[in-house]
Amino acid sequence: MREAISNTSPLLYLHRIGALRLLVGLFGKVWVPGAALAELEEGRLRGCDVPDGASLNWLALDLGAGELAAMALAL
Image (cartoon, rainbow, N blue to C red; front, side):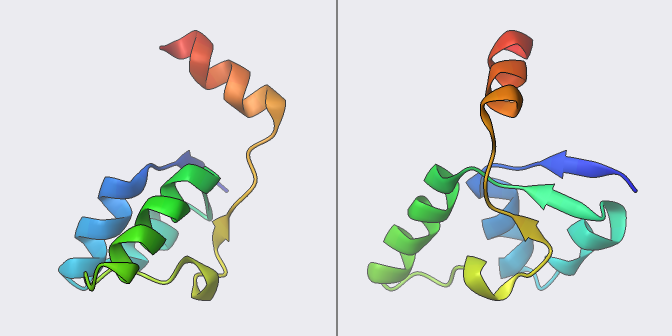
């Protein structure tokens, strides 16, 4: 099963066009940093139409030190 890492933008825009489930269809698991979920929550508090990360059981919400180090190295 393939996995992906996402930031806020793909989650937000796919949600807005009703296509968020495409991510789980393409990838069995999608890793999302806590900061991205915090951005979505901030949008919700401001009245924006954003996905509820807690209801997306296919999101993996905890990136470990190894994943974060690999992303930093890739950058």
